Image (cartoon, rainbow, N blue to C red):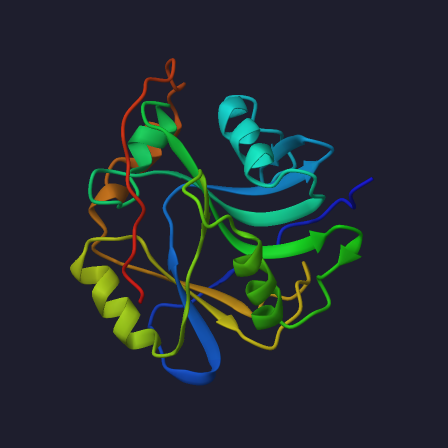
Length: 215
């Protein structure tokens, strides 16, 4: 049986920064989710411990992407536009094809990885992601240059970045090792509260591509 994981929390910071002990990732605008993959199946669980029931096909695709594996991933469910940028309304109203962007590997075939440093977990995660196209994608990172990534994110009208201490373990009580820095002019946040008060309609299909802004 897979262990039950409490998602790592993120602190908030207003300004981006550079630091040799930190890595920086794109903050994807979607639904935070843990993916429990075991015995040919997958369960997608929210940060409030609720199972996402409306992403059944995505869960099936994730299980297919990692056959005969027992893993727990932390990541984000997103929908993407034709340029590979996250589109929250497509996700919220179930109009687009969802992807799972994994940014952490917490458990792998009987080994609990949460005590390992972040960069070791991400290295193992990258090795695990299938080379062939699938709905399971890897969140890349850059070292030290948080300001460069943040400027590019703001230029492209994306949600923000996440800074992570590269030596840190995965611990729920730690509120200093993961920090989100949001784009204050992000256009998709306009009207977000009103959207969250509405019930999503039935899902429709749309095409998408993978976002790649970090080389």
